[in-house]
Image 1 (cartoon, rainbow, N blue to C red):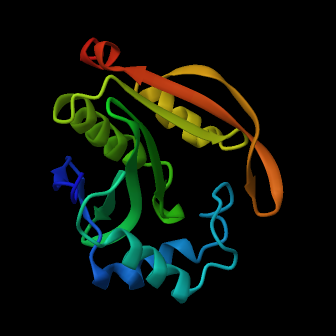
Image 2: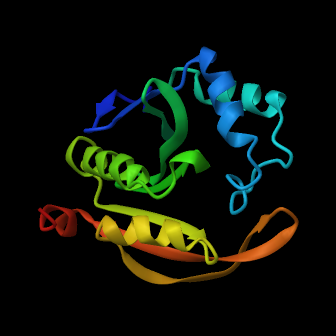
Length: 178
């Protein structure tokens, strides 16, 4: 995989991260509420934002595609597909807290899922989220994903071992969602 292509929705531009996105990333990611369910540094510093952007802004082969979520000209989050084998991927996403509750994460995720199934010909796209992050489950369910299980004590988030819920969607289910 190389850099991801630009994807457009009604309200968003999804594009590769650029080196000049650091200020926007720091702006949303330094909000402690934004990273409550994510395994990100707390406090999230400008140095963390610089390191993140430098890591995802490089070109060349990779095991994931990472898009900046641009809303009204500002980078307001990120979304990615992580490839675990040749025909399945995990989707992950985050959005600035100031934009929560507007359907923007679902809009971005729908575009990326469509790209994954149609352009990349993936068979399965799955997602996992902290069991306490009900808003993330709702995004998965709005995409048509089905809950497949509970991953007990899967990861450490801010020093606490947490359970994740697992959701997945198959290509034929996506095609039938229209």
